[in-house]
Amino acid sequence: MYWKTEDGLLLSCRTMEPTEDRIVYISRTETFSAAHRLFNEKLTDVENEKIFGKCSAVNGHGHNYKVRVTLRGPECIMDVLDHKNINMDVPHFRHTVPTSENIVIFIWNQLKKKLDDDLLYEVHMQSNESDAATYRGENAAGLS
Picture 1 (tube, rainbow, N blue to C red):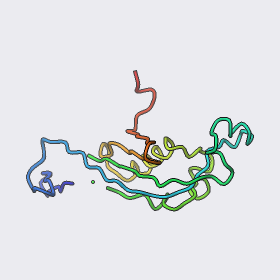
Picture 2 (spheres, rainbow, N blue to C red):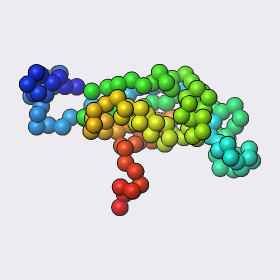
Picture 3 (cartoon, one colour):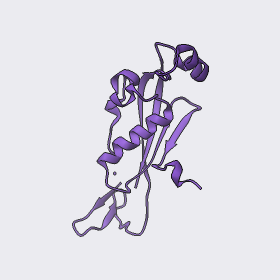
């Protein structure tokens, strides 16, 4: 973290030394528990099961998610997701499949609304010990 002095100088909050020529990335990890169901409402239950397997079960399933947000100062949006059924309780996901990829993009977009340009660097989320998604605001048009 850093503090900005009245004259615009950035100071490290740990050392209180000037950091004007350094870029420091600060990450914060939060956790939330939520349920979701992977399905496309335009498909039949059989088609959804072929695509999403047991993750398309009608009652859904839960995860203990771990999200890491990296900034170049932190804002919490976990209340929107924590202990919710993502499909039913988060309006954005009523018509969007709540995959980890879509959830990190949602978190990115919510944080982006609240942070200065170029402050948000990365959102990283683990849905379990072996699966994770990371988003840095890039889109496919920017890939070579």
